[in-house]
Image 1 (cartoon, helix red, strand yellow):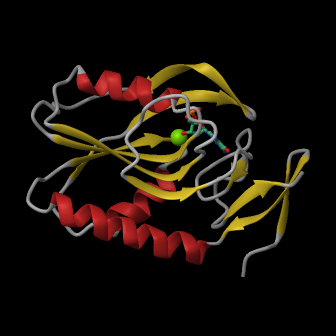
Image 2 (image 1 turned 135 degrees about the vertical axis):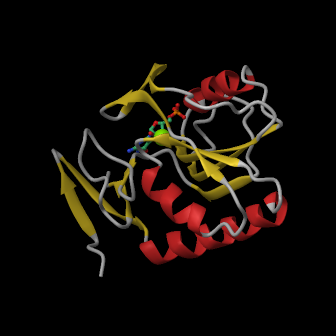
Length: 180
Ligand code: 5GP
Ligand code: MG
């Protein structure tokens, strides 16, 4: 059973999306994506660190042959987007002519994703799609692909299920929202 409230560093968070809700939505997304990608042998590119937990569950909900490549990007300090993105781990294989499925935990301003899509396009893939567990529609500043979104959420800071607050909270199985 999940706790209703957690305290992380100096802040209180309350339960927002439970593990069961995450699980059933992830399975739906896997099913939708599988209809389209069967036989295409796409490459999943999860953006670390935040998306590791969602990516692990999401790829298991997909029923087609695929490959994985991980990249690591940092754009957040504490609770604020820094506005600049920093590649800490980049492309290591050849993605030319391949179908790419970027896997994100959350799209906030969309800065990280836009920069990453631009970087990916330079490598001439056959196509690029985005799967994100969460999207903050009121925060997005870019035209980004919104085909596969788990949950559209308000503009409040969330933690758990891979998402951290200054290094803590990533291993919580449910998603919590800042209590204000
Ligand atoms: P963006 O570039 O879209 O503003 O932010 C992208 C990244 O910032 C996300 O992939 C995630 O790692 C982090 N981020 C954005 N919003 C939140 C949030 O509410 N909670 C946490 N823990 N991280 C967030
Ligand atoms: Mg992320």
